[in-house]
Structure formats: C-alpha cells, structure tokens
Length: 343
Image 1 (cartoon, rainbow, N blue to C red):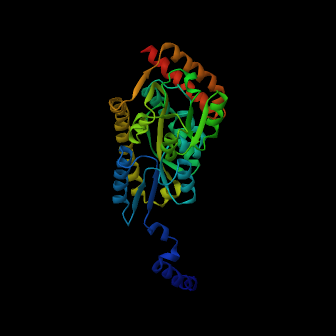
Image 2: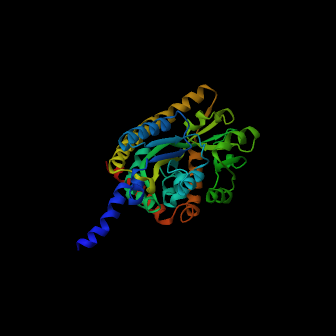
Image 3: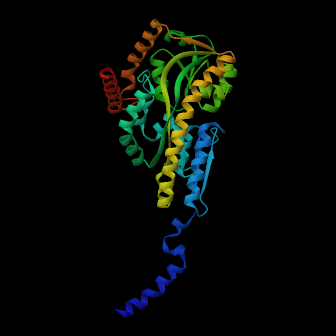
C-alpha cells in the first residue's frame, strides 16, 4: 500500500504545482464577456448593459471583462447568434429576430399581428410562457438573463397610408433572413424587401423601400422620419427582446459571478423596460414637432386590418410560429381578456 502511495505522490505534487496539468486552468482564466446588439450607442439599452457588466465584473474579479458592441457593429442579429455559436461573441441583446434563430417558439410573442391590445395583456402571456421558453433556449445552449419590452411596432411610410390596401403599392422593409415573413407578405399581396438594419437608411435614400415597421424611438434615433414622414397610429406587434449569454460562458463563471450577473440583469431589465416604453411614447411627440404626420385609424380601416390579420393567422400558425406556441399564446390572451371582463 505504501509503495503505491509513494508512486502516486510525486505526480500529485506535480499537478498541484502546475495548474496547467491539473485541469483547473479554465477556472483560473479571466472570463471575458463580449456582447453584441443592434441597440444604439448611448441608448438606455446600451447604458443598462454597461452597468450590468460593471456590476458583474467587480464580483467575478480575476481580470473579468464585459464588453458591449452596440450599433450592429457585429452584424445583424443572425450574425450575432452565429458569432455566439462559434465563440467570437458569447452574449447578445436580441429582438425576436435573433431569438428566433435560437428557437422558433419565441416568435409567438412578436410575430402574430394585432394579437395583443396592451402591455398588461402581453405581460400576462410572457409571465405564463417564460419557464417553457427559457428552458427551450437553455437546451439550445443559451441562458436568458432578462426580457424587455421595447415599444409597439408602427408603420412609418413615405406616403400617407391608413388602410391595408394603401400599403400594397409600396415596398416594405422586412428583416433580412426572415424568409417566412417575406413569403407571408407576398401571399397577402405586399412587396417585401429584406434588408439588414444597417441598410435601411441607404435604402430609404435611394427609394428602394417606402415603409419601415419599427418602434417610434428607433425611427427617431436613426432619423428615418425624414424619409418616412407618415405614421399610422396602430399597434401592429410588440417589439420585445432578451439578453442571453452562452452556456459555455455561464459555466466558466464563478458561482458568485453567476449570482451577481442575474441580480444585475434583473435591475437592467427593469430599467430598460421602464425607460424604453416611456421614450417610445415621447419619440412620437418629438417627431411630430419635426413634421411627422400621425394618421389615426378609422373604424373601417381598423376592421380591415383585423380582417387581414385573421387571414394571415393560418399562414403564420405552424410556419412562422410553431402551432403549439401559436395556440398557447392565443389561449392565454383569451384567458386574460375573460378575467378582465369579470373584474
């Protein structure tokens, strides 16, 4: 027995003295978080992410660093997800476009037009669906840090337009890579033009596109309203997103670092949620002072838009949004409305 111990002892001492041989070197390497997002530099999103990263790095220590790449400098959201998968990035603040690249089920929160009437209604659905959605995203290799509501997507157009048919004569921007959306719009008689976010302004300047569905604050921030001086006052779909980090980066953090990141994420999500919705509303007033024309829905136009949405639902269910998820969202919306009626 002592002979065996004496043979093992030199190797054990060698491993203790040389961490590179012990298998613990990865735990001692500084954790570097690189987060990509389309959020504008200096925006509430950017500032909240920087504060979150600072809180985390102080606790993680050991040379930990948290770098945010705003303004789409790492490419579109599909590019950000691809870069996370190959290790060039390991975190992202993504809209449904990027999150759908991870798991298509999340599309049920944003890609069903005119499904939600209010943020309270949307919040009820999200709270019910979060555990399942976060598990699905976790199984795909990512940890959700927080969810955010960024504002209602509205139609900004070059020419005044109110009824659904008014938009059929114009070229409409859609996110690059969203082939289901392109096909859907063509089937409904519209002319979609798929572009990356960075290409919107040049496309407006050259006349390639005439309509951009976006939240008001984005339209103001990038001054798209100069080319799109008309807005339809209609909450088409909510723009929401989530911050995610790869499971690999998550596993490399210390337990204290993971706790700190989650606590900082709760704070960041709350700050973004509160300020983003307020800024989105204020953006319309600012643009109105600069010449934006806001067009209200007439009862007839409102009915036509809901008819269009109803026509689109069978094309969305099972393709853009998985059938199970589509049905669950619809069921939860009806449950919320029934509860509201009984109050």
